[in-house]
Amino acid sequence: MNFRLAKSERRTLEKLYRQSKDGFSALATELRTDKRVFHLYNAGVKSGRIRFGLFGRDLLIVALMLQKPVFMKEAIRFVCATLGQVYDPETGEEPGRGLHEFTDVEMKGRSTRYNAAEVSLLLLIVAADYQAKTGEVSLIVQERDALTAAINYLYAHLEDGLFVENPGRCGADRYALRVTYWKDSKLPRRDRDEPAYPVVYTLVQAQAVAALRAAAFLALPLGMITWSQKLRMAADRAVRHLFTTLWDKANDYPLIAVDGDGEVCGISSDGLHMLAYLEQEDLPPEKLAAITAKTHRLLTPYGYRTYAPVQPGYAPDSYHLGAIWPYEQFFILQGALIHGQHEVAAGSVRIISALERIGFAELIYWDGSKLTASGCNPQLWSLAYPQAVDRLFSDRLRE
Image (cartoon, rainbow, N blue to C red):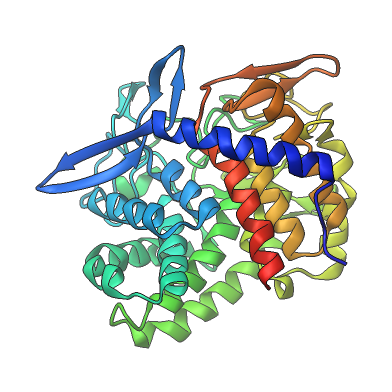
């Protein structure tokens, strides 16, 4: 039986879909650099002004959500054009590492410019989706050098099948940001809110699995056909770590991370989010059941929190340790549909009623009685939500 939105949810989603188009127009921008022109979107507006500009992760995430070839193409072109070329301890740059923030910020004497581990992984996933969707290889061939560098970056970070993040690779002992995947404000259960490097983030590990498969798909047009089997085997090895090395046996739930000090435990939305990057065959049934059994601890009337209450560091108004992010509800929904978890899907679409009330906010807080918008409004990820959900259900109907 297929999961379907309730009629009231569908009506609200249709209204939000129309409203989101105006929001996209407000964030549209044109970038000219090195004799190239890019038609892109800023990440967010706050108090009527651009608060966050161009982010590689944001553009690629929205490309994944919308699956619109024009958007995908521009995101691919931009990230390829700004891909890391050298090792730089100040910015976190490495050859093949995707850009975090085009207009970077200085923090603790370092720059945030390349402070995102997973951008190159997302680039490969979007590039493979683009080729599969359009049947065109011209863009892939045009960006061959950059995409090959992204594959080399991915492969170089694998250690015994684990995608390892380590500032030592660029000659540094830390990054400007505390954490270098999307929940970059703090890591729970760590004294300084940051990992003891090296670190493996479980969500990024799942993204690495999808990126390795994407790279294998791209191997032929990239002239790397001899790599194809090696990349598939690496993906198979990487996925096994999710349910062994990166599994919290005490809580029977995915770990948030493993770093130099050991396991980072916690009931986090990462365990649901990662399902969007995995295939049905990847999950042992008992592990899927264990993940879904914990969803009630994250669930609110408006979707899933980033981090469950009654844990160290939790607060309902914590940016990444308690807030509800509209965009993440899409990936939780997508993962739930892939793996046939309709109750999880139903919990994720509760965000629709929140968006109707507070607009396309970056994140929302729910303290048990009051719903509050926070961050940018509108924010690019949140604007993409209604169009992405509409696309997702339309695709499933066609299938």
